[in-house]
Image 1 (cartoon, rainbow, N blue to C red):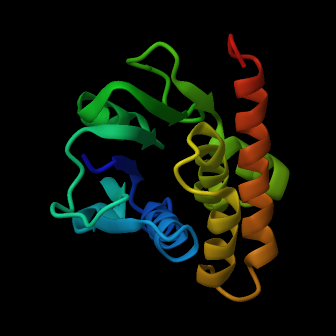
Image 2: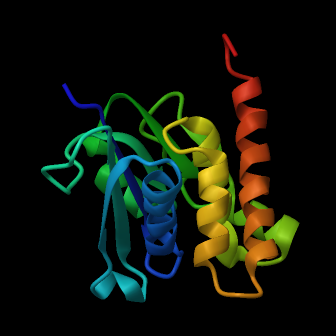
Length: 185
């Protein structure tokens, strides 16, 4: 049976989740040589409603491009957490931006203040998506850190590479600090 790993990045339009999804897909497909498909929803959501980007990764060709049962859900705001939590499979990973998500439906969620870290450490809250990618690279080993970093450099606007890589590394550090504190780690 083919291995299939499903990720949904969700939050408000304008938080850069479509770009983050494209980066994850390129990292998995181009740099890690896996089968991958990325879809997105950004119609009216691009103006601030709930938006999402889905990435499906497999070791074989993917015959259905939508996420069915999520292995990892990133919720950057309360609305997306409330709307999409039901799609997370049992034992799946929930990562939330604790800057905006205060009601957490699952014990054991990775609570990381992505936006607060981006603002405090980098002075730019718009790189919270890259902070989240750094955390995702530590929460799951589905996509290599090296691959994500290469995809970031290839995809972000020229002149912003060091800012985005700095945000990515801040997310790695934040997740490592949480993981260190977990039992059996």
